[in-house]
Length: 238
Ligand SMILES: [Zn+2]
Image (cartoon, rainbow, N blue to C red; front, side, top):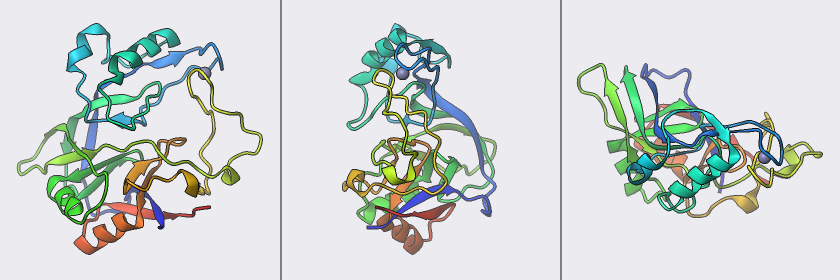
């Protein structure tokens, strides 16, 4: 099986723009006691999660940095609400994408390199093709225009890693407390075949969560069905 990176299409005929963020999120962390880093990133999102049952127990709305103990307490509060296969990290976002949208959207929409939205009709066609693990989650986007499309966000689980061969040989293991890797994504990515999931046709990399990956099956289905709006860049495997 061949794999591809899914990216925004900068040469696209579609003019659609989205400004928004997910309804809830975990804070970043300040001064990890193990690695001393302060960090957080919103590149892992679980849009299917409804935090309403625990929303009153802590602040899940204000983006901020907290001591790691508070971050870990919040992780425990949300853990039972997560989809199977979810992995948290400081700054992870939860719940629907909320914001504004305007312009013309293609069947597939990548508002950033780490998010992938699909119009409902397109998602139903892809699911009918038998693609695996495509979960579309409702968004709360306010459109400026009439005849607004219904955009669903794909819930992309973090699985799969880059091959050690494309990473610096002197890298350290991830921080045992906060999980930080502190690596810059290499320009020439090589996927590690032994880490790739057999049950998902679209996912994000676990070690570089800005990278959305799909299978050749996914690309072929999009081509056959004429679903455009993003570009697919081949990723070598070792
Ligand atoms: Zn750490």
